[in-house]
Image (cartoon, rainbow, N blue to C red; front, side, top):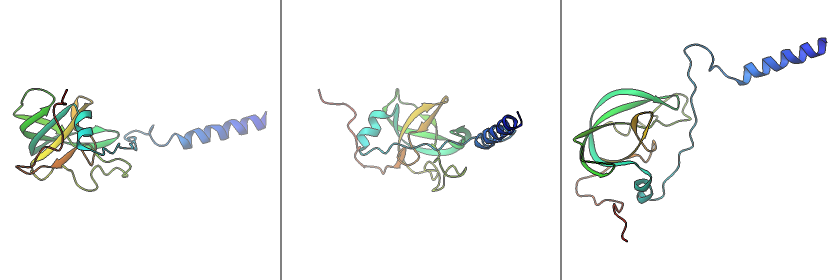
Length: 154
């Protein structure tokens, strides 16, 4: 009986150690997402629900995804290539990097800086998010040709 109690105690200790600190008040759990790398802009275009050219004009709060903070930006939209009618502005959150010990944007938030951007986004948790931390928003200078075809020839 004593051996069984000892084994039960070790089992409980093991369970407590592998469960992490997620049960403690005020703590959060972070997910380490393995982001897909898109080889071609056409692949990004096809997987995105929203594709726009626009300029982030200001931060408009934050939300959380995968246990990380994500900055929400108001984006003044110049053109919509996928995802509905032409809005004048849209709120889009920058997808945070993961596996970064709680740092959402170790290389900087791609929507900071007020540059004209080509943005590929999907809706998650009720918000538009750039598709990936690295490929969801790319600088897009005036006069630059689109890197994708919007309508497939039949």
